[in-house]
Image (cartoon, rainbow, N blue to C red):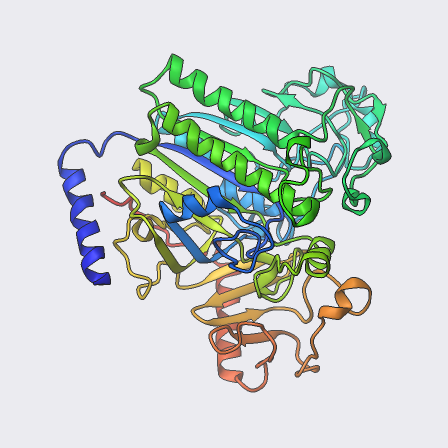
Length: 521
């Protein structure tokens, strides 16, 4: 029956292509969540402490990937992966930290093709709204480039710094409304619209001015410099409204031109600050309310494309940049019996699965068959090559070098038993590598690669190391999904094979094929 359904889907796709309508390029919307773990949606976690009905609906109407991963276990390197299709070490030589203050320059270097630049070449109108966080260049009054740090925020000469030389509008986006870093966490707290700052940061923010239904959830709201009028409590509602305006205005003015929009949310990054209308929306405390707010925003996007009558010609992708934050994971476990990692070991920053295995949902009515659940191994970097395939753009060998085309899986014409990815790289907090090949996973480090589990709240979740003299970790995720038994010594041949694979992927300049031909659908 399953093979019959796949065959029927293929026939539908072929019929569609032969009708001559396949040249109509779809609109593409990426909704990129923040610190949202594998277990944070009810369609991934039946035991979730709350429901996410609109995301569950999106999954039922499209495809839900259960072996999807972020390129890194922290936000800035993962965002680089989304926009470039590359692992962060391709830009930095190793790892990549998260920016604070006027940190930069951008990880997206000149000469690196961005997903927005690629889509513009195919005629798309492009926009990004929300958290940027891949680095920006700022100058002081003496034209000296400023580094990160909260004190440097007051040294910015906005006249000399703007229009930004490496902001979104210089990287392929026609329109942008962004914050430079985490909107509610890392100063500088300002809004940047199309490379310009209307209101510079001149006020000192104090976290105790923020309302919150439970004080501990204000954790990680740094007291840096902000623009007067900066709105912490409604960040994601503001980003949604900017996205909505971009889409509706474009449809009004140029209805025949396809658009590409990225809505990059603050949710569910610390601090947990649900907008007032969502306080008490669930029985799972402030973070449950926060994720529910995200669910409502996704629902508003789904409703918007229907209202504009572009639903059938809009591909919507939902993804997250890494797993759940340490204290969020612990507090949700203790207070609400909610497992934000969905049973996987580890959290944000860790190389274990919970640090980078994340939700990934795609919906495209009439093209992506409804109700698919795929075990294809995927990475956020794959959004790039998939979008290229959708629009018929043939990537050069040095573009998006860690990106695979997932469109065959999304259209239901490539079975899970036929893997699209033969292998996959990820990187943890310090830039250390993990590599997957089928069920096998090798971590080129001991411990988590991120958080310390020797003391503090994470000590309760530590596991004994059964190969304490090893220099890395080897697991078979099929027989040991919890990454409990390190087979570094017991499976020596496989470990050597995985080490050789890792060396090949990190020294060859790419992990994806050189030639990627767009799918004829």
